[in-house]
Image 1: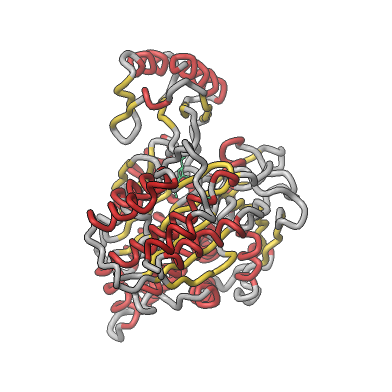
Image 2: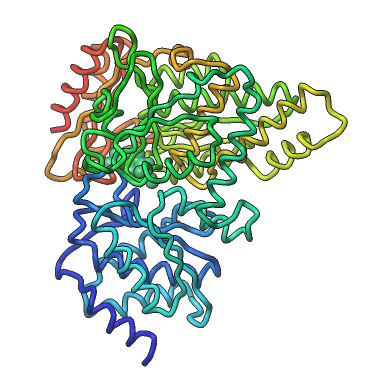
Length: 531
Ligand code: 16G
Ligand code: ZN
């Protein structure tokens, strides 16, 4: 039987509902799980083609991140562990929407345009989150790979960033690490233990952290990681999936958007707590003070903590490396002000979505990127890594320089540079707090957030809104931006923008201002202008 006959036969077991149209959005396909079986099979086919084309291993992750349990989704991972390129996102959409009888010709179109050598071997890594639908959907991906004669490796239950890491390790012949979950724990925990070894007077109380696992994959994996940490970090794990529902009233997205603690977590005044999202690629921190007031330390505060730490170490190590922080329009105005004016680091603003931030961060020796929602990581250029390593291993440098260089080296190793990673970010943050002898309150006090509010508005067609300037200004519909500008003028220290969501059929509204009342009022007024 020819290759295409096999695909045809197999695809009839994963039929497309006629007329259903879905799009590869900011984070891949994402919708109710019952519409996704054919998408998964076809993404198995596409990943196989992408693997043949790049002559490298490609990843396919089955997850809908922070969406409700009933949803699911899928995203493709390119050879270095990054998001798949925009051209291939387009192919994904074409393949997904081809009616059953047109699938083979849609597949042949991609093969022709990309001039793919079909005799080339293909290798695809597959992972999934804990959603009940993920089992059969991941199987559909594997079916797609085998229908086109590709090899696959099923990693089973893994976090999204773990699968990104595996793909990168595999394609760099182990230079980045070993492409196993054990290898991941080993590399990160070792770097963490070496970092905290520099924090000699850290008490047991300071080593205590509560973790909200969002009832998802992160809970399982952080528990596995903890076994490697040699009691250098004591985790109290809540929302571990044994009772609660995935992402329901818990997790990083809930905490960030609602600006309140998750249910299911015992919060003692003053104690550090963090929340993961449903696939553990986002993290936010928080605590309640003695008056019961909730304090959120989001992606902006995390980026500030990390970039401050790195900048201090660069100075101590006398390393002249260019460091920048990449944010989106959602970054709190206070964070941008602090980074630019007090820390004096370069700040860049990009469109929402990890790939945009990742790309911008690659332009610097050290690029720290975080979305306010807690997704982020740090990228080191090859040259930066080499300089750090040389210095850490040099025999001629003085003790202070060497200590700083070694801290930098271990910092590089604790970070998952392929994508934002809640577990890796958590270890990095915990290590920084320990090394600096800093409490969560001191971290929070670096700057004060401007009160802010996010709202979503249902409109008949969100595509009528087009934005520019990294989504900070609306170009269409005519008059909208003028209306926003005049509303903003009525409030002090105010800023507001609107953008169509890339993951939901809504328009998002963001407003910040001097007081919470003012931010709430502005968000409401802008919503009315959109409607
Ligand atoms: C996706 C993005 C996230 C972004 C969010 C915005 C990835 C892996 N994830 O979850 O970075 O913040 O979408 O959603 O790129 P929105 O367009 O609905 O506001
Ligand atoms: Zn996520």
